[in-house]
Image 1: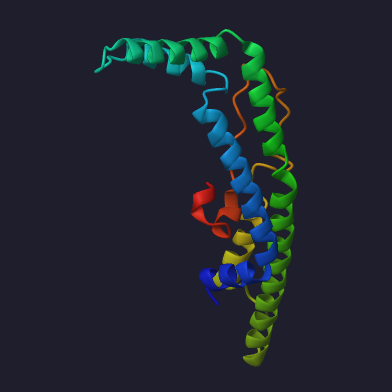
Image 2 (image 1 turned 30 degrees about the vertical axis):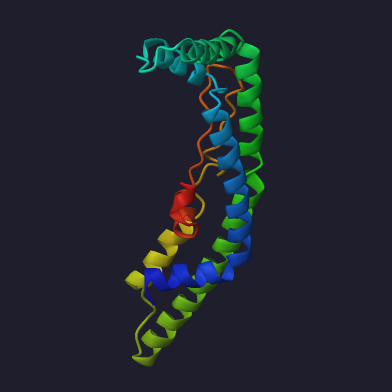
Length: 190
């Protein structure tokens, strides 16, 4: 049994939880992308305003200049309103917090799968060693399984990684880190 075999079996045994988590992550990413595209999150509008103010226009017609001025005015309104930015950040952070349950369900299912596989590996090692009259000894495969087990508990919502920072304009947005669970969840969610 190899690392890939352990992971593939874990994926198969956790397919339902992984799918639910993928859907939740996709919803979160769509919301984050929408708020980012609209420059509603803290700092985004200010950066965009700087870019728009310095931008050279290729079309200096009155309609083009008015359109550009309207875009600058819209972005300036966001820059001038910390409430808009704070509410946008609060909404994105709430969506991030909603990822906790699906991620923890994947962790729980993955840990159960790997623990079961680890127990099977240890039993196979014991049987092998006993067949030759030797005491039980660990093999690299059980070390890999134990390492995978530990890595499944290392993600954004792990008890030792969660921190309460408050939700202020100065606090950066929370970022999703799937840690060891990334092996089970496709890369586009990173």
